Length: 93
Image 1 (cartoon, rainbow, N blue to C red):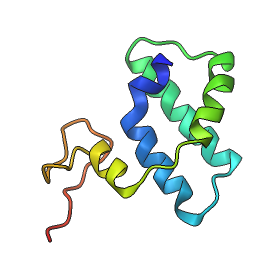
Image 2: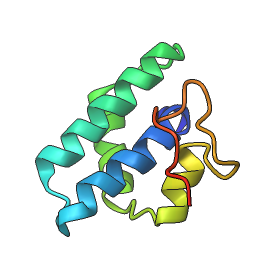
Image 3: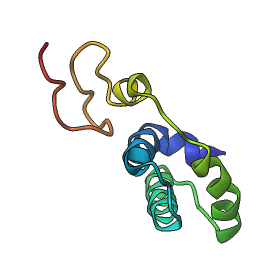
Image 4: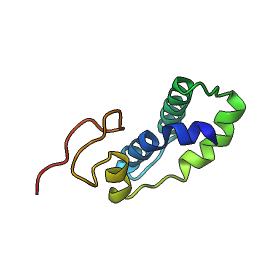
């Protein structure tokens, strides 16, 4: 779905945070869906309640790895991309 594509990097980070306690609850799914709708709106893509209903199972299946999160943050090179889902630099090793 176009909405998920517009928000994928942020969804990856949010899903990882939501899974940090081992449980992805309905409230967390709702927050991620709100984020998707907001990012899609910024791209000129409308998100209906029907779209949210279709996106919810996709959100629940997101279980990103640490590498997925680092890629979403644009940190494979050690630097965050401007406008990426993350705003902090990766810790130095």
